[in-house]
Image (cartoon, rainbow, N blue to C red; front, side, top):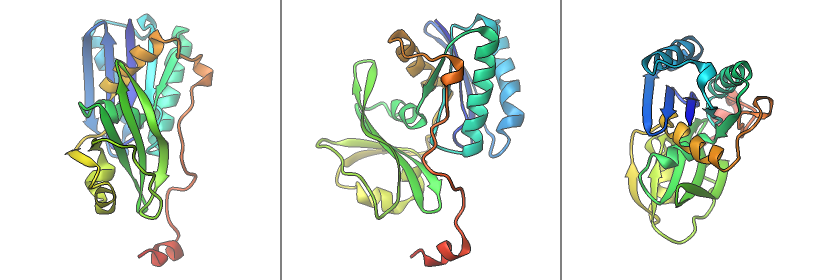
Length: 226
């Protein structure tokens, strides 16, 4: 199975092509340049594989949560490629991709959502797949879901940048994997499992995963925060 995957939910712009067990990756810290960089990166990874988009079996993208603009770009480009190739799409939650990168069986994944908040989810590995234990949620220090029993691994910019999040789960987290963001390689690998399970979608049904409808605080809201 050949899968082309993109992940742009954070400042990391990432493209991967999975063909059997061979994985090719292009990555760069893009900040706000995803729309400028993503298509050339896709062309490069296809060129390295001597492949064409029309030859893919499945297209995949990190659907968020994360940067509003980033996940819209990923969804739109993948939909366009899938329509052109008449192939299906597998959306992968970006927090699930992050969890899969942790190298652990129980993972608490969190991304910095800014404004003193984080996107949080928890997953447990079940063979080649993952069970969602805490669904992707927008959290702050006043609203944090409890973890089931067991020792957990924490990963993601939410834990890297928010001391309150690390403190809240300090008694349950045995390992903190620092400096990781969701990557297209994990999206591609997960998409292969989902596609084999019949979970691929027609391109028009693919959609970003949004968890809030605002991207900045008002001056009054900022002043009211502790």
